[in-house]
Image 1: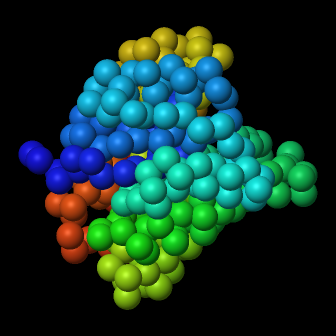
Image 2: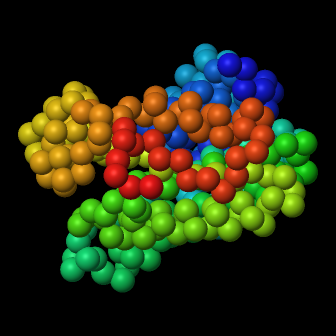
Length: 265
């Protein structure tokens, strides 16, 4: 399916690896021009090189920490200079790194989770909005998480931050509707990212086997999907690409679960 992304300009925040990179892959496959924003230069450089080979010849990595307002503003200023003020798509795929039970978390942990998981998204949307509003068409896709609907004992701060992403995105879908900017949320379930595969290794499970990974999730957290395996980052990318595309012309304010089936709505 042609998503109408040829020469569209897209920023993927957190696009150097994992689900963000999978989304960037799909956008590049359809001919979009990609800028990746992240904190690690070598990761961004490697990812940009791969995207250049996939159909985005001028793909670039821009180093910025979304916890720092000045760095975010500089990154989007660079995007504006590179593409002469054009921007059609913003994907926010950054998530908080904080883990721990409620009893273990300090005030600093809570602040870090909210800053990484929600405020980073806010800063990026704020910096991108002038370009998005000026574009012929524009889309925002933010990453939330299935844990906002199916709680885990070790993720209260992570989940709270992601719930903020969902709520803020819903508000943005209302506010930006007058500009015809569509805003949607993707909530991945148990996806075999580096972090989840690493956790599996810590409990003696081969995280490279999605069936073994889902069995471990069931055993340790009691959160199995209806499908008997974990998902793959490449299964998230096409969903994000559709939501970010011109093919999506009337869906806004939606929270799309990509979770292998679950008992929440």
